[in-house]
Image (cartoon, rainbow, N blue to C red; front, side, top):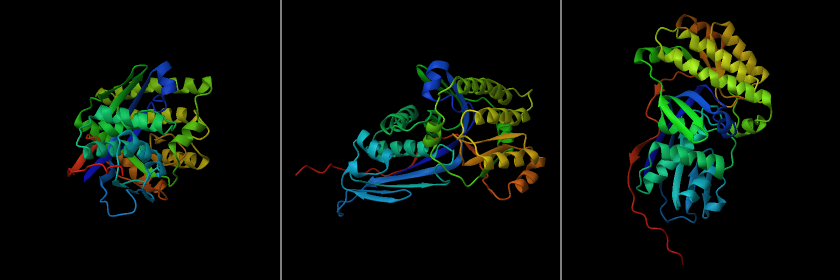
Length: 335
């Protein structure tokens, strides 16, 4: 039996510039972190006592004898890609899917990590990120960027740069004290709305010059945001003010990014004292994050009283195998 633990991520700046159609031509950069909310993938070989050979448990249960009959596209394609057979897979998570935290990509990374471990093979973080990108974007043909798979695999507070040759991951050099202060000034709330990121991305395809212009402006903010974090002479509160700038740009990149209700919630947070914030992920629903000075946090909580408040801490580990129980397995011989 194998159990993997893979974090979710929150992206602060540069989201959208990690889309291949954009960064191959213009370059891209994202500033993001993983945090202490996780998905867990448990995989083992299924004993041959049943009239099915594969059992999957996620938001539903599937029992099949043929891999092609699996409904879940990521599991079906990953099993084919890595030649997996006769397994029982269960998925659990600390937070709901389709909520703007890269949950599907965290699952993809954690699943691949578990599959490799079950086969007795080691896969490093770059291999897992690369193969999760290939799984979701090519095999499953889901619209979206590359940042989620990379963040889930590597973990930590990073700057991820994209270009025509691929990507690089660089930790943001920030003192522990300043990092704690940033963490303490961020507040996350669940709007109650969920959506498929790929659906939002398809609705907001790169089809006009104005969107590319906004994405270029959002890309330029990554350098400024990183400078605020790494330069102790700068006011950390400017990070929050810059979040407000990037969110207003993000809203202009597509009709599906925000809704009237999300806009109302955001305005309530700002009026209560938040310096800035954004909806996490591609848009359309999920989690709102605000940058709020400590003395204003009670008022912001009151303003968001109808939403669930989710405390969190940054994490640095990325995907991990937390239980490794090797199994002897021989493929079933063809009759």
